[in-house]
Every structure is written in C-alpha cells, then in structure tokens.
Length: 113
Length: 108
Image (cartoon, rainbow over all chains, first blue to last red; front, side, top):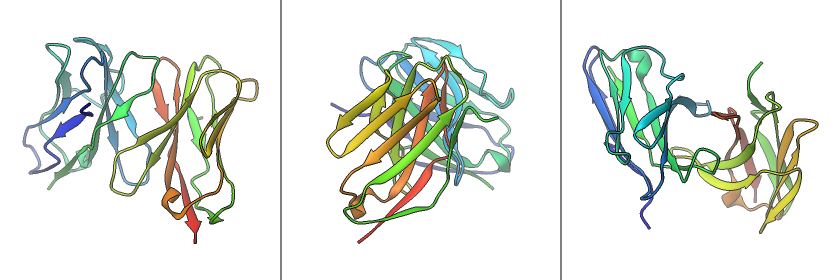
C-alpha cells in the first residue's frame, strides 16, 4: 500500500511569508505526528494528532506554528511570518495508534531566505 | 538531561563484523522503543521495535532492552556497506523522543 506522502518536497520562501506543508498519512492510521529535523540532529517533536484532534501540541515552538487535521486523515502544518531559523526538514509520520511504530514520509525541506 | 541519549559516533566497523549501537533513556515509564535507520538526505526508516525486556531478533538485526538499566541497543551482524547510515533510537513515553543518532560506517 501507499506510504506517507508529503508535499511539497521542497519549499523556498522569504522571511515573513506564510507557508503550508501537507501530509497524507497511511490509510487507516489514526495517529499522525509532525517533526522538525535540523542537520545532525534527531527529529524534534512538534505535534501529535489522534484522529482529528491535537492530542499533544507541546512541541510547537511558538504561536506562529499551527497544524490541523480536520477529517482525521490529511494534515497541514502552517507557519506564519516565517523566520530564517524555521529552515529545516519537516517530517510527518503516521501510526496505527500512539503506542505503535511510526512510518515517516519523505519530508519537506523548508528554506527561509 | 536529554530524554534519549546516543553516542553520535562516528562508529566504523569492517564489513562482516558486528556493529553495536547503544541508547539510554531517562523516563522509567517509557513503554516502547524503536530503532530507525536514516540515510543521508532521506527520512527515517523503521528497523525494529521492542516492548519487553530481553532480545528481539529480525534477520541480521537484534534489539536488546534492559528497562532496569534504561538502555536499549541494536546489534547488526554481518555488517554490510549498505548498512552505513545514521541510526536513530526513539522512545515512547507517551510522547516520542528521538536521540540525535549514531553515524555508522561499514568499511568494505
């Protein structure tokens, strides 16, 4: 079956702009996670959805970051007023539930100029 | 103290040898443990998961969990050059925490 997909694969934007990153999880997976990964670091947790609701958003760095999953499937990570420090690879992962293994998408490389 | 700690390496082993990767975690309530492999420029790929104390084997890979000592390890037998990658340890405490990864190079 299809894996986790993410679009776009690359996004270059200017400081101060708004961006949306999309994640399409594996069909039937109720748990969805967003991470951010910088060079030489492990994935940094941002937010976790169980179904439609954000079960844990404690990893969002500030109120410029927001994510939704309105129908319990596709999720969108939204970043307002982007800053150069937001540049990273944004990874999405999905799992059958919160306890089990996660499967990662290919990531979106965000570059803020 | 970080939730998950790994030696960043790099770890180099000759082809055919056993590679041993280690990870320690801080939360005794951690429930499940995962090893991911990440090739440069790619996303993490699940190798193994383990929930119970002891060993779990899958092909050339063995995961070992010791909850009393709060460590989890990954052994790779008969290492191949294609195993060269960064290996990430992840721990589920109710939230997933990843280590910074150990870089492994298998020398032909």
